[in-house]
Length: 213
Image 1 (tube, rainbow, N blue to C red):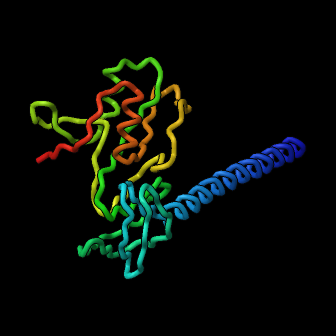
Image 2 (tube, one colour):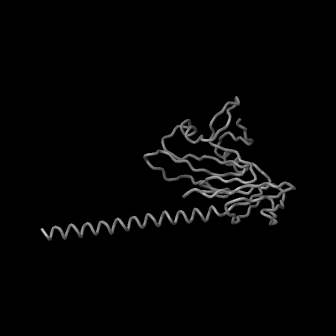
């Protein structure tokens, strides 16, 4: 009997050690992901997609960006000010959500950007893929409220949850859980980049946003 109890205690102890190790690994992964997310969300991209060099002030500091260039800076959460061509814009950078893929762009020229839902999956019809990826409000050809897989953005400060930033390519394939059949990845495009991306996919290209009342 004592031998049985000792074996049971030893087994329980081994299980607790294994469970504790697994929990520690999970915590390390979560903490690591959180630290990485926080460090990335502390960064913001100043972007100039135009054909001309621009000069502006951000929080009182002078910046110059050459045509078709961008610059990554550290930008803390909270209130900020942007001065460009005599116009001052106040904006707020929000704190990222837990494990959120937060991404922000400072857009002095208020150029057009596109947030696009790229869907990956198997055994999906074209109609199913469009319906599942269309999560943004828009208007159809008759001006009626509709849902689209793209959202147009032109604010001086853009902050969104994305999987791929301005200069990151979307992959050809991603892992998809069998239980879900599909997954959606969000990519932020400059207007011209989006036009080329969609044209390469032989899809209709919409270059101008449509307001929804």
